[in-house]
Length: 329
Ligand SMILES: NC(=O)c1ccc[n+]([C@@H]2O[C@H](COP(=O)([O-])OP(=O)(O)OC[C@H]3O[C@@H](n4cnc5c(N)ncnc54)[C@H](OP(=O)(O)O)[C@@H]3O)[C@@H](O)[C@H]2O)c1
Image (tube, rainbow, N blue to C red; front, side, top):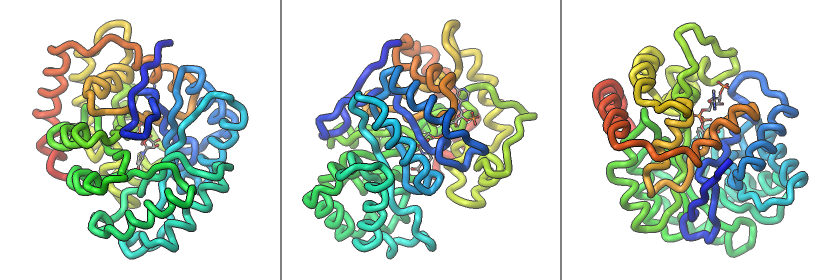
């Protein structure tokens, strides 16, 4: 298996262009089994993954603790990005203050069994947080205090990303980007490149839709966000199937199928398409099973997407997806 690596912003770290999204192993995606989750994490490292994205709220520490276990069991250097902020209830801009953020970080340090977090991302805070330089000052202070190596942001909207990277110590932006979410490529990618900011692309498979394996008859457990957040009931609707309604997604996937060359799966095609953008540092597909991880990691070494397939993806997006979602995030 060939894995390629890209510079992560100005951190000096080179990370796998297919990395690992550790939300599903924490919770909110139906039943999970820690033994299988550990096997999926080990498979990722076997495939060359050296970067894992998690958050304190993924299973309320469960995902972070599994990653701590992985780090104990492996000798390879693994960069772990976690997130802070979503434990706030209510989730308000005022909650993003020095006291709360510091205490969330202390908890992540414990869960990840470390003295210093590699990368902490603000976890999709309200837009107003980006207009509060004092919070970024707090994060600078936590760097100086040796609690965190670096910090970044996870955003919902392109405009939040553009605002966030005005702060000189924001190293990374995590944003939804896929065949079904293309607006970040318009303005944000050029600016991220200019400022040498790392770009982590989440929900790269549109919550599994871009694997081509979901159907009209697929059913999701009550504790799977694809069931309980389909219409944004719990958090931003854009995080589930990237905000594209299920039937529209299925129809677009059927059209995409014709563009997938032989020898690669649709999941690999969708991930390789993301890697065609050089502003992207890595895609962070989620996965609960080793077989999914292995399939996804193979996208790194897959052949580049042809110009005609790139045009095809654009056409399908423009015709079926853009009118519904392009201006929403
Ligand atoms: N606000 C935030 O900051 C935020 C929000 C969302 C996600 N994230 C991060 O981004 C990561 C990725 O996004 P995501 O997990 O929401 O969505 P995703 O990567 O688009 O989809 C992941 C899901 O697709 C299915 N899947 C993955 N590979 C597959 C394969 N090869 N074949 C068939 N099914 C496959 C799995 O679900 P099933 O097997 O159950 O179908 C998996 O849980 C997360 O894990 C998390 O780290 C961050």
